[in-house]
Length: 212
Image (cartoon, rainbow, N blue to C red; front, side, top):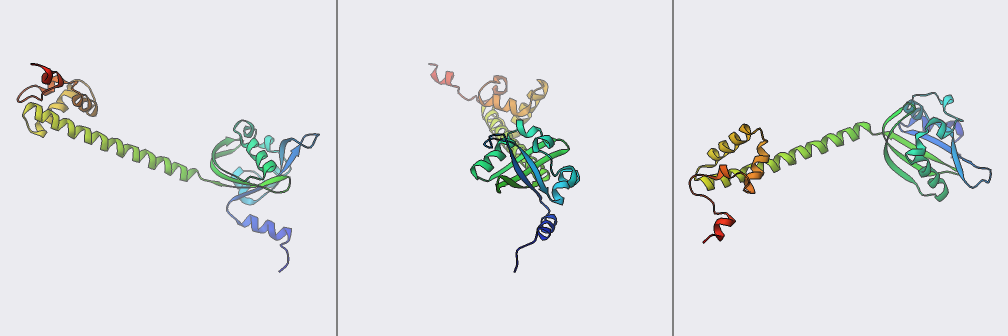
């Protein structure tokens, strides 16, 4: 089987649904320092991602197209790929020159430049944030529930009442003082709401225990 022709290679790259870009290094007069990159090729997915035609991209400089790459560290990261041969894999958010969203990029050295694949992971990252927020809400709710149950038992034992009566007392106190129920329960557990602990059989505090 012969080598793949350039036309067949381009057709293959155009068939994939991930953006594919080839960049060539632009060096200073000494030939040692990379000062920019020239976009040599991009497939259809890349042009769609950037919202431009191929002829508006190929031949242009990276920092001309995306000047924010200087400040966000991507230019230096790409230069390191070329100079060291160490591949780059990174997830990042971009909002520059029509390219907006969250992306996963993978860059590898090729000759005096690099090839890069990129895919839009905005939806995945949004889902991950939603799941993280939900987990945090559930954990907060669980923690609050535990604190409330502990406070109910504490007040019930201190006042000689049942837990439901104790809960009503705590809830009334929170409502009357415009306080959040979990916050009142935490204060109960550290003995900061003595009025809820009056009546019936009291719980001996540290001071009571030390009294003669």
